[in-house]
Length: 216
Image (cartoon, rainbow, N blue to C red; front, side, top):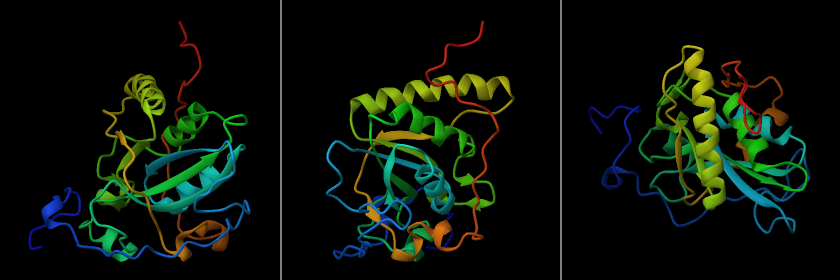
């Protein structure tokens, strides 16, 4: 792939071929003692977000009250069942994504969107801080039209806050969920297993006004 830049989305024709066999998934969450893969507890809902390196991103969500389970994986690309090494080449098209399984009676999708927006800088395009490449781009993968509308409304609300603070345009993709491929065992709940491990996540320090009436 001479001349290929990791900050450019690979085309489907040039993406790595991947494999048919899925990566094995650990049976239980290291922190929440819940299933990583379906079936999930009755009444729970799935949400999926990409906001940079998934190690720190996953921890943000498992620390959120009302979240039943979290897992990390790869979404938004073309290569079936990719490995971490393949995703890091930029030749699969995937983002590092967190799947969040939550109890809607205890935490709302709007609450999760607030965590998402405030945990990273969504204006950076194909990077997040010092992590550069298409795998670090910001994305919301919605499961239904209700999630789509909520994500778009929250983006528009946060854009006003960011603009007033001197930030540029939000580059977050808001797109229908595509196949979510679980990442390798050692990535799951990484910062629980390695408490002093790398976390490249950094927000803007600005609050997202979801569900809050705008100030006059």
